[in-house]
Image (cartoon, rainbow, N blue to C red):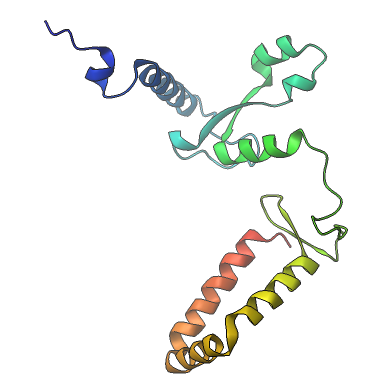
Length: 170
């Protein structure tokens, strides 16, 4: 018999392998029982890498944190990205102003589908500074390329616009 350690046999730390096995078992049970709909967005969780376990109500804010933590009725499955996004926002009060001091109003704010916000005034200022920093030579060479490649330029513009619109909430 070999004296090789479990880590050498598995190619990774035994604790890591055990955790992965537990998650694989849980993923199998989640799929078998039809509980693979995300608690946050309602869409199906497609693969094990997207699976996350979360508390429906923050246990730290509960009257009895220990009971809330272990309460199985307070547990849900979600996409990892949905869970992280909710955790990032749940413990912080909503900011009312951007870093430059502009107020977040409906007229002055882009709101993206993931809940992120962007100040329109700051975005316009950034775009103006960016365009001016390109310099005339860069602008000229870009315009020449656009004239030589009108189909590619149009496709690039459509792709950029589509990508930006996907992220925005109307």
